[in-house]
Image (cartoon, rainbow, N blue to C red; front, side):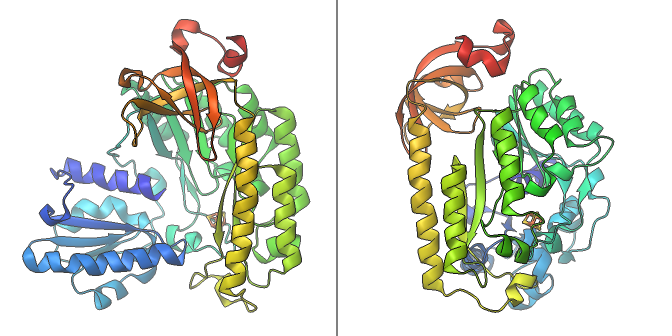
Length: 434
Ligand code: SF4
């Protein structure tokens, strides 16, 4: 979401005549788009902000802005501690960027109840895949999470605006969109989320639709049917579990039990057998016992996720969890995190190895960053595939035979290149068909 917010800022600045520079010392304006989801991101920002101070003495015309969730949370306080900062604005006030730049200093952190109607131009770095916001904010107040305080109340963009933006992207040649929201399953405008997916699925030129993030409590059977039936909706879902213990889930205010979650997983796997499921987990939530940690480990073994994002609990000032007693000591948190990551590494590798010898439809994103002779892309299940190929294949759907499996990616051999229109095949059956 932050990456896409940066694209919107870049879009506004481009319209104002700004051009991007790769060298900070050449910049007239530097914007830090901050994240406050965990302590580590905050620390990184603070040291970067300190480092950049010297540039201001070299170029007195340089303007420095702090945007994002730290800006929202700390507001005017950032000025006090960092006199070299000129502007502070939160994620709900990106639309004020142009106006802000005409002033000497400004703080914009007010709630924006109209954010769903702000259609901002985004300057996207990629040309195959695009992020598209479908809603803003969150009403869930999970006890560990700062997002509802920084991004405000949940607001859904009108379906027509989203449709028009994606239509334009298709005309520009984009092939894949990822719909963004803190809780896409509760999208509600002129239609619900499955209705929105059905509408987007009709847009010619778009060949893949993804979405993040789904809240397990709100994952409906109607949505599961959509993933199954709509040809462009990819067979991958990111469904944050956070913990395998009901007591911890309750303390987290997640609104589901482990059994509720498993029931949704059962339904997903039964309806879409080849679906890839990924998740988020927190190690060492306050008062988590060894036994409750074992429940999370057991959940990993039972569910066999395709991938996970796991982190140590990080107290966020202003949230309920930050006030909770019985915090887990750092060493135990690290140990639990390592156990989670170690177990998942084995599962991910085993799952990737099961793909050896299969043909996978891959949307080619471009040359690999580490090897210019190799192309990189993703399967419909969101696994990274590298193969020897030509750069001209960028933006094409190709079939790749998987030869080698690693933990974080797959290696394969280009099998065939096809355009969907030429074949007119049902995407979901194409691999089997060939
Ligand atoms: S649903 Fe996600 S964004 Fe919303 S409060 Fe919970 S963790 Fe944070």
